[in-house]
Length: 394
Ligand code: ZN
Image (cartoon, rainbow, N blue to C red; front, side, top):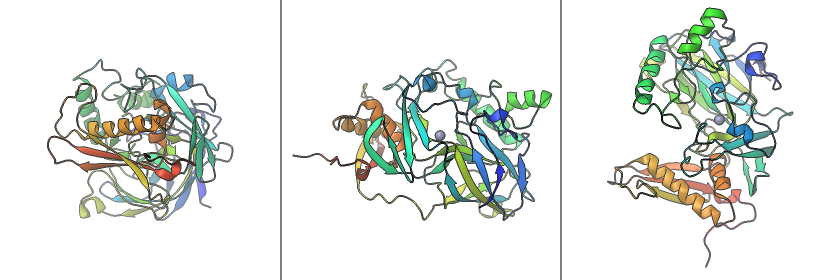
């Protein structure tokens, strides 16, 4: 078993750990530990909210969650000899839950505190707790389904350079300024409240807390991509922007549907991840991977083969407004069509929404050229429904 290089106590908040992690992106957050290229090691992670959600039936913890606290990450790890311009090769060797916490959560954030992909339709907070039984997940809040998890880190990335960080903050502020009072906001700008910055202290802490980018969006460094197929057995090639790479990881998901549409996640868990790192010197230029990682998929994934597939087009629901190839609206319509159908199977809209966010659902952009409608599909494995034939019958 690889040596544990980053340890957490799941009864304590991230800033109270012996060596704290962080919840902002900034090149000046000091490394928590260092490794050599070729080395494998274990990192333990808290859940993304820093333990704010409890295993009970009351969604008020979701409703009142402090989103300035997210995402608490483990790391950064400094890889010796790695320089800007290199590619950091990261093998995700294995991922698991802690024996004392074999459960995870999903939820719907209230519109005024986080929101989600379908917040106009489901503005109230809700929660589902998922019990993890070996490789399977089941929820007392969404009966009649059981599926194999496709476990992965929702968030993994290298640190930005100072120039890159400044550019993120500039462009995201420019977006927010177009509609500064929007609920939920167009983006989360730097905010020092609830910042956790490793072992930084004093004036350095204050400066970095003010400048540090929020961890919510995916960016050039990878980050919160929420790609379900980045599972154990996959290999990721990260562009490197600072000395040592400064890789961080967190937001582990036991399972997730493409799009992670509820925003309060996949099946959110604390747990451990085993990594092995290596370096390709000068790889960013050589392979033209200058921004955004690439990755190789894993040979180990649940093999669902039969799906019930819902289509959606880029016409706004309700208003009937025709848009031009808006793939976001097409995916939303596909999800809404799936939810309407699942209601006929006896699920509430909220249950169906959370199921799309947690089960190994495949989302596709099926067509993006047939003007004026983009076509998106959402495919639900039929075998996740226990003892139910989910197709239409005569
Ligand atoms: Zn997550």
